Amino acid sequence: MAVSLDLLRTFLAVYRTGSVTAAAHTLGLAQPTVSAQVKALEEVLGRRLFDRLPRGVAPTAAADELARRLAGPLDALAEAVGADLDPQAPGRAVHLGGPAELMSARVMGVLAPLIARGTRIRVELGLADDLLDLLAAGTLDLVVSAVRPRRRGVHATPLLDEEFVLVAAPRWADRVAPDAARPAGVPVVAYAEDLPVIRRYWRTVFGTRPVMSAALVMPDLRGVVAAVTAGAGMSVVPRYLCEEELAAGTLVPLAEPGLPPINTLFLAVREGATAQRAVAAVHDHLLRWGRRSPAPGGEPADASRGT
Image (tube, rainbow, N blue to C red; front, top):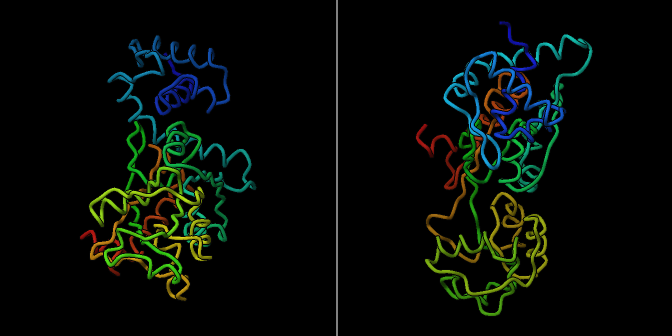
């Protein structure tokens, strides 16, 4: 018996999202319709594709095999059919997610040449876990993530390393002990109330937990840099966000560790998404940029990894 493309497309959406509800949202269908189509496909194939869980579904071995065979061809077909429907229409937009600071300060400039040549991009800003959920659900094509993704149907490649630096305006430099671990009366400017970036820096560099609370909480690292530069206190920020201020002397490093703390950023892509030419172009362009970017210590990122 022939299997319709609609059934296969619905199956792949459920497989990728891990949920009938999420797949229905992605496809623009009612949830009962998605459930009925999955059941119809199971009847045609004569095998169970999903085990129902209290929340979502889990694929069977048969579903894993079917998804492996279908993902590339169906994604390529969707792109080809979309182009044929309106040859004059611009290509499908690539949906890209990432942290607001990095996307604004670095990634948009990197992608400018692609955009100038006609690539259409839509950007979603947010926290890594939220964006990776959207990627797994099929809402996004690519995500620049500060955490390594651990979701079915999502693959990730190390993109680049960001270095963190403890900084303050020069007026505060003489308030800090020689090892910088015990600032005397220097206000703390933080990204979040629990000092996530500062806490990690203190553990890595000083081998202890920071015993301070934030005077200012600003959930955007660009705002943190602006406040610290204006003299509000000290903070830990990615070096790429404060390079100009360090060069101008409006910010000074309060510590000079031999091995500065770094965080690896990943480029995550939904399985099968790079079968679409525009997604593949953005994906490959970003990876080439990551390989060319200087790593902490001044070497190209790929050289620092031995690749």
